[in-house]
Length: 511
Ligand code: NAP
Image 1 (cartoon, helix red, strand yellow):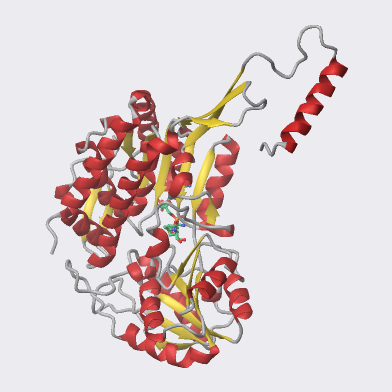
Image 2: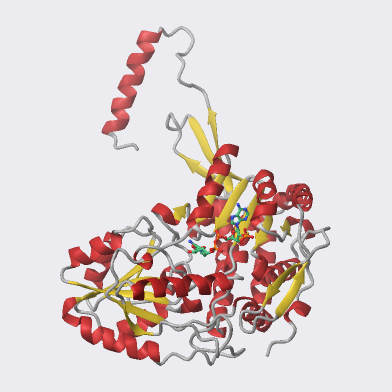
């Protein structure tokens, strides 16, 4: 059992209100912590403090911020046991899944600490008139960034998007999900210990229905992660205010197993791709397309591995899959499977809740014979449920994988790496892993991550993941002669001179 998780968290959300919100343990259903709930007034207060603090924070050098970020990196690794306990207690995931979040935050902190100077430093750009126009691109922080994060990856989702916003010189006001706020507050606690001035990163806790308007009204940029339905509402509100928004939303991710795939490796990969955090991972796989030639052998291997998974609540690394996080996730997974089975789907593995293990456990489930009239055919389950389909040509597999309004993540398996990468490039998704479950793309932090279509707008990671939190500004200094004719030169004559100059630039190969 963990130490008392709440005891390890010193920070409290910005709140004056009295009636607390309760988080419950997914493993047992027992109360976990009472959290003070913020009112809309508290949120306004948090923005006012953040805005005041941001001025001083933006005036620090990138080197100062880098030192704090690397200290945070070291603290996260040193004190990871606290975070692992908290994440497991709040989300019900396995320690292995929780450790991936610690790894993710270490990678993110190191990357942005070490990349920010290059990304933020002023850049010389081609001027309007060669030599005579001195043009520079600058990046200024947006000001105060609002971050709204979900419950499924309590540390990755809470800290992962705040770190680049802070590195760019912004203050942050964040609403983590109430169910997983302790982990977010722990990260804030560590960041302050690492040297971040107190008011630069603020946390508020409460339901979107109560403090959502205040969160939207106060910030200069919105970073939202959650469902597509909520993302649409946030996008409408951001449009009304004419502020930018990055929206990382849902998916119905597909894996394509090519005819030449190594069957055992692909089957093990499918287990890793479909069931991390009990399928409550935005990039996890819910649709599997397998080449006719190897379909039966692959299904046998995949089903065998899935049935052998160890399920349970353990605060060590022994389990393969943990619990779902909320009763509504259990309800969705159960109802999707029950609906599919009632309409003729075949259960190859799992297919039922496991109250003997804990109130929210559900078996890793593989379904065959899934048809378009079944809810889970095209709707995201966000649980440990995958449908498996046979295909006869690569074109057919690509068409089926792309037949969804979502476009978040995909995976392709095949021995011929070049061919598999070609198929990957044909999938209409923001990221694809080849011969790996999902971590290869997510962990490639130098490259952009996240979705197309109904899976969202904007990207995290890479240059985009930091520069979206800035306003670009162009400063063009015109020296000696500009576009107006010099004194005494007629406009007709000036137009001829410029025309000759443009032709010369073209002939010289100037951009
Ligand atoms: P959700 O209902 O949209 O809620 C997500 C979080 O946003 C919750 O904490 C919620 O708080 C808050 N929220 C929603 N609308 C809000 C508003 N108008 N103002 C302020 N806060 C608001 O999503 P969910 O079902 O809990 O989360 C799972 C979804 O997230 C899945 O679809 C999954 O694919 C997606 N996801 C995507 C990514 C990605 O990177 N693309 C990553 C993780 C998860 P309240 O519940 O208190 O309102």
